[in-house]
Image 1 (cartoon, each protein chain N blue to C red):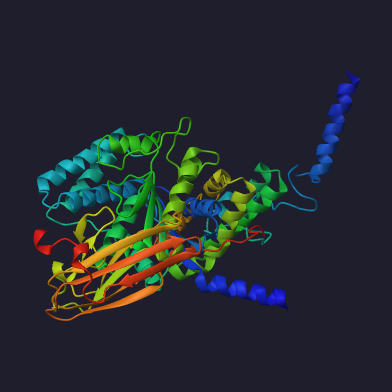
Image 2 (image 1 turned 45 degrees about the horizontal axis):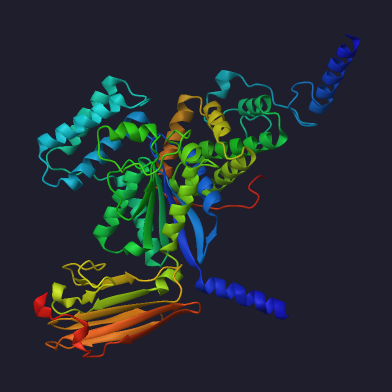
Length: 161
Length: 401
């Protein structure tokens, strides 16, 4: 019985050390998550709140680190969230779609590489990201614009940033 | 230095002889742009960036989702357009009956995400739009057509991989391209995956017996037949069903893609005899007799009236024989032709690397010719004999034809 307790204690210690953060066991060393933003304030604009200005909305960033533990998965989804944020916040015309396509293309390539060709995590992330009427409307606007241009996709040997 | 020169030569040779093939993807309904782009990434990971003498680049022609209602209204109207194509004399009543069949199909399909009331609304909208002789054309496809035309004009090949409803878009685009008469059929090939269209104009399709969406559509409409059964692989998704690793569906996708891409390879193109005619008699274009009578490999005779661009318009007519395949070695193909009572024809015959100009004067006597194309391990060789009168015994008497 004593041995059992030791194993549990050791396990807990190892998990704590590998997490290296008291807020979440999934966070890498030295990484601090932003605080969860006020829901009303965060929903007022399409861009929402990005208090640490890393290009990813705070609530989306918290979602990623809370739900994915592997560093390469976290990085891939942060890359996608960043590219998605660029599209949502900036695209107004067909020309904008062309400008921001490369980032989203690379992010999708990276995600598929990391998640073994599954895009389920991207679908889930999209549903977290496109979560207000104005964001849904902007996403629909982007889709309309995207359907009016024929876009060549660049493939990179290392799409992950 | 020598190595550098060799590498430079190789690069030069590659750049000189490589062809550009654009792989277009057109997605189905209710597909986000992220999913559509992911489809393209997966197609790229399967087909790669080069195939034989072709550089493959990948293009997304995104078919937007307007939500279930609007997307399915598109399907209504595309199916009506397809029906009109096969039944050009269809009456309004027949159109109404056809549309009501679509309604019945939708109500039986699994997970259409629409209520019966919404489906009824769609039925009414489609009837309003499609009766009275109007023909549905989808403006969404116009930029795809112009992009393809721009590419084929500069000599690029187009390989369209369409999925689900995208197969109907692909057909609309192809039909418009052919109406415009600017794109040669040998520069564009299509592979329709989970094909819900009723016809395949130029290429191949891949539909699974265990695809529930096709099964539902097939209950009510004419769609391409299933051409593959694979146990334990059900679904309609491009990535998760048709391009799923380790499946026969994926293997078949690869084989069909490569077969279609093979038709673009220069190797194959060297193995053809190609007739091109121009400056035909008369301002109103060709008559049947402006084109040659050709003796085919099986000994049958035919007028080259299904030549590319052959029409009542004054234009170049191109007639191509794909005689030898890449896999053929040490084979010889002989082609005989004759012009009968031609008013006046100018043109050329290309065979391997040999080009023979033809210039038949007005009211000339009959004109005979023969091309012998050989493929050996060293490549193609061709001789053309056909300046004037070959021995007419090679061809039957024209009066008996």
